[in-house]
Length: 334
Image (cartoon, rainbow, N blue to C red; front, side, top):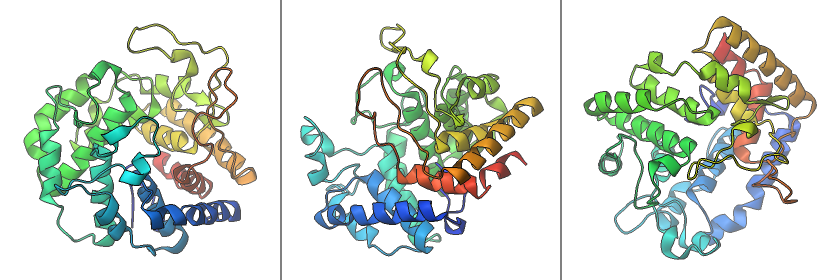
């Protein structure tokens, strides 16, 4: 069984793909072959590439370990987010490509486990993570960005927190930090973002403190309902965290996301029966919608800009859509 923190309780080796999902994933994997050969890669690209191969073939075909070693490791042996060649593609990025965020460490941790589940975790990862524990208790590498906590993306620092804790737990190093991490996770005010609350819940579960989730989970589920499923956030709640003013939203449109739907289903487990039933009903409708329209995974559009805000479809979303169609997400609410 191969799982990932992004996709709760979904075995990547057990997915049954619709023909549209299989064809899209095969085409995507072929489209990145040249970049893989040229070392024009990012840690996130390799993570999704590994996931796609597992879903399509049940095993890995490409030598991902060689890629990590050749292009995504610095002189100190730290995992990198970007290869040098990929970094040069980023606008005015300069030498910033040489960075080690928590997710890059977690990607390497996950990849190593896929190759050899019985292999011990590299203790260098533990040393890195423990050196990145901030006075606030959150886990992130300040050398990557000096942005203050209140202006950081909540989904980013809660994700880093949950990822860091997963690695620490795998080595037995988590217990020493349990009181501090519990206080950090439980004292954070309610966040109106599905992914942020999802990662907080996953962190609390690793501490055996899931009962400390905030009372507002049903509210975030209600306000994030969008399209046929859920969006990660409510457009009406968009606020500039730096100056506190509401952003222009009159032309923004929330769109449903398979990943957001999966996280909503997971969060509903800690809610009251009425909320669970509401999410279960919406999940069933979204599952039927994806059966009829398997690639209806729209991109977010921002204001009056004609271009898409990010890619319209990613491998992670397609894999999640396949899991929802198969009924795996509904297992969260049984």
